[in-house]
Length: 236
Image 1: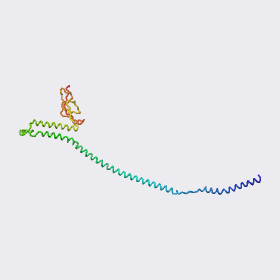
Image 2 (image 1 turned 180 degrees about the vertical axis):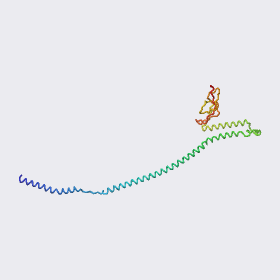
Image 3 (image 1 turned 135 degrees about the horizontal axis):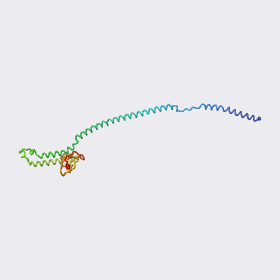
Image 4 (image 1 turned 120 degrees about the vertical axis):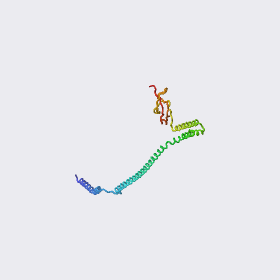
C-alpha cells in the first residue's frame, strides 16, 4: 500500500465516524419519542359515567313501563270483574224470570183450549134450556102449561146434545185430537183395549166386534185407547 492509498482510507474512516456521531443525537431523540408515546385526549373522558347513567335511566324507564302496564292490567281486571258481576246478576234474573214464566205457562197452558171449549159449553147450555123444568115435573098441573109435547122437547134436547157433540169434536180437532172407531178392524194392543171376548159366527177371530168407548189420537200418538170387544176363535 502506498502513501496516497493510506491517506485516502484514513479520510474515509474519519468521515464515517463523524457521520455516526452526528446521527446519534437524532437516534436518541427518536428513541425517546418511541419509548414515550404521545397521549391523545379527547372529549370522551366522561363516557363510562354517561354509560352508567344511560343504563340507570333505561332501567327506570323499563320499571315505569312495567308499572304502567301493571296498572293497566289491574284496571282491566277490575273492569272484567265488574262485568262478570253484572253478567252473573243478569243470569240470576234470567233464571228467576224463566222459572216464573215456566210456572205461568204451566198454569195457563190450556188457556186457548179452554177458550175454544167455552163455545161447546154454550151450545150445551142452550140444549138444556130447550127443555123447561115443567116438562120434567111429574105433576099434571105443570105439564098442562107446556107449549109442546114431551116428544117435541125430547127431540129438541137430542138435537142440542148432537150439536154439542159435533162442536166439541171440532174444537178437539183444532188441537190435533181426533176420534177413531176401530169397529171391524183387527185388534191392536197398541191402540185398543179389549174389555171382553165373544164367539161370534161369521166374524174373523181377533177382529173388533163392538166399541164401548171411542179411541182418541193426538197427532200420531194414542191419547186414549179404544175400549172394544173382540171376536173369539171358535175353532177349538
